[in-house]
Length: 443
Ligand SMILES: Nc1ncnc2c1ncn2[C@@H]1O[C@H](COP(=O)(O)OP(=O)(O)O)[C@@H](O)[C@H]1O
Ligand SMILES: O=P(O)(O)O[C@H]1O[C@H](CO)[C@@H](O[C@H]2O[C@H](CO)[C@@H](O)[C@H](O)[C@H]2O)[C@H](O)[C@H]1O
Image (cartoon, rainbow, N blue to C red; front, side, top):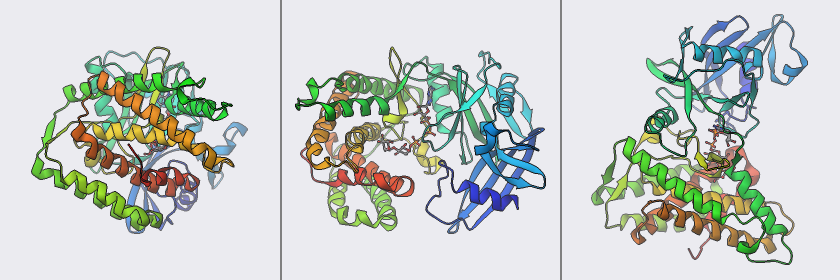
């Protein structure tokens, strides 16, 4: 009964990674009471022979107040069951637990040594388009609850604690975390960090700039439009290079020898093969993409690798009054943990952000009645900000040599392939944005 209710509910959640595929079965792997009226569930969702596990904080009440009506999952007996992340009373329990380093029903709640947690703030669920669920406590903390669980320490926790220990700039301070054992392995369930305020998401800032440019009549060059973003793109490039430097200092680094570079191209091809099988629109671009991947096989230099961000885009960076802060070092949601923690070329992150400038420029064109006329403006905005970001990256000490062009292009295309699948699953009306990346271009 509960499993059926959860299966129907989970498939509608923004953070559910298996959208677009029917759920064959949902089973409850663990169900523990944390405190009266609050249960922690780990459920296994079976789809087309594969299993993903998710965590759910399940609230139970006899009556559901109006403020929680939208969180209702269903009624079992005379109890209302609901998504407890929306219940600030129950969510105080997590904050208290981290403040006191408590362990309850197998959940270990911890704070970063030396930090004192204020337990007074009440939580609100952040309304962001997310692969997880974030609770904001007052204007002090943001606690990200990972929805899809993968056994092991989350790379984001690993990275931000290592960078904070080095007093690295451009990160949000970590304050606490929650973990449990999954398949016998300590597994991160949540991470709590400093809540940045006032601060603006890079995506929102970039879109404001693009809107300004489109609205600017008579048309002026992007650099002369009111909301030009290039100075910010430059600063962001600079911050990115500094964080790459810190990551290289905090974790081991290595190189991919020339004879192994071929394997990188094979990795790109495997992802392409899987993507084409899922999204047939990609098929017509395969030979152009393959051509770019082949250039990687012709590289004659070894490739330096290190820990990287892994899913770098404008939605992962925030501008505070003083600086750019980089968030969400957990890699691409949906990839195996080993892949997300693997050393990679920092060019992968550079490529991710370059793609994001294209996204910001093109996102307002999808469905726009004047899309054709605005297309050159979109290209101009993207080119200008991509170039500024690259300048900032090298100014900040990042290394991009002429020989890196082939690898950077391959990373960009591989990211676009990932994005096509991501959009097909999550936002089909956006799919034209990453598909535009496969058109021939000058740079
Ligand atoms: N430390 C923070 N301070 C303020 N806002 C934050 C912070 N961390 C994340 N956010 C907001 O939450 C959004 C989603 O966060 P993110 O870590 O990218 O989650 P997800 O991995 O689920 O996408 C960000 O785009 C940003 O708007
Ligand atoms: O932020 P997440 O870790 O959940 O990342 C996933 O979702 C992103 C969308 O929210 C997605 O990013 C794509 O869309 C962005 C605009 O919404 C754009 O800035 C990015 O360049 C583009 O890749 C990301 O790929 C996905 O992993």
